[in-house]
Length: 284
Ligand SMILES: C[S@@+](CC[C@H](N)C(=O)[O-])C[C@H]1O[C@@H](n2cnc3c(N)ncnc32)[C@H](O)[C@@H]1O
Image: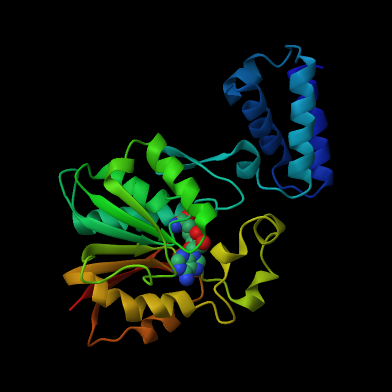
């Protein structure tokens, strides 16, 4: 079977299974299986694939047709220009979260800055690890209530050479941290924020494959955000910042939850669709 024939067969299977952009997804899967980029697939369309590649490709296509996200099959996702390992124990890093990283970098400074950062709900570690990669003297504490997720975050910190500046702790929000020991310049979080009712409406790739603990904190979707607003001040230096990603419909609600005696609401930054998604607060 040639590359072109394999791609044709796969895109038909994916299309029949309701996978959008089936041709592009077939290309991504084959690139991953034979470890060649997409340009190679086009310029070598007539090349014969060996039997083992065909078998592995068909297996990957079957998983994708069953709704498994591409990133869990390939085991990687790009985030802020770097490759992060992902498994079904962690959320697949999203482009919205790159906006949070961008906003955090604007707040705490450039490459020479040395902020002490906490990432609450670190998952793959994409926020904490990226901030450490971007600021060479920064240090971070990355917490998650999922021990399995923390293992992936540690792996990513190791592969991206920042593990010596990071501490990983199993913690339900700040429960395992002592505020006399930990005083941060910046607390960043992409918390679980999908309400229980909204879970059913998610794409099957998300709902059936990404970890529930990463998606939803319970009925109204706001319980972790609420806890961050209440608990973070004790762990922040004066004038320190809390930066959070929120759900597409939570802007007004979150704004009404901000205690103006505790926080200065600096910004509600919109995502690429113009929806307020990144809340930037400063402790008074
Ligand atoms: C939306 S995911 C974000 C993962 C990663 N930071 C990112 O942006 O891709 C939320 C993460 O928070 C963790 N989490 C959920 N509830 C938590 C809690 N109460 N305390 C600490 N971590 C929590 C989940 O295990 C998950 O890894």
